[in-house]
Length: 209
Image 1 (spheres, rainbow, N blue to C red):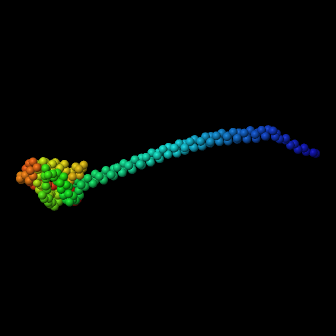
Image 2 (cartoon, rainbow, N blue to C red):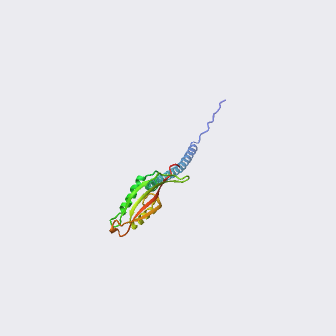
Image 3 (spheres, rainbow, N blue to C red):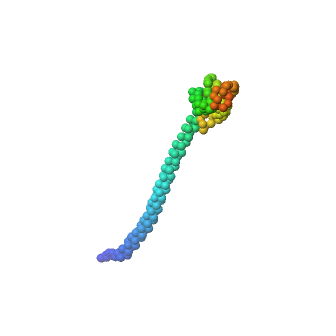
């Protein structure tokens, strides 16, 4: 008995179409995915460019602020140094009677004119003392001047304005005044000469605290 084997004929056109459709679907999906990824990449690149631009702007601003800060800091340090030096002149941490002597002699010499004389005859300092509970110390001193009334008034105004940061004059005051009238030693002075004895105090920072 003869057995026949039946081989089913394959539908190649249909299979090819299926492959073609599948391939096209894959291509379309890949294209859509690629476009989506490209769009995301473009957005990321745009965002990075914007961030870089913003960072550049912020860097410039930071540089400007740093330069401004340095200028302000330099100005502050200069002004602080000037103020600190002025404070050391008017309210020192030590007796500094040498500098005080120089300034007193200068103000006297600046006022001394042939037509309006003033002369400092002597200047002596006591020992600096600190009163209990005080934030400052006192340097007592005594001076005697021969002067016209006009120059004596000027000297009193100078002492009264002492401690001013603008002038840098040592902080001091007058504790007592003794005045004697003497002969007019210079007729051009236009008035009687005064022999004035002054007991004064200059002030300094308290170093014991």
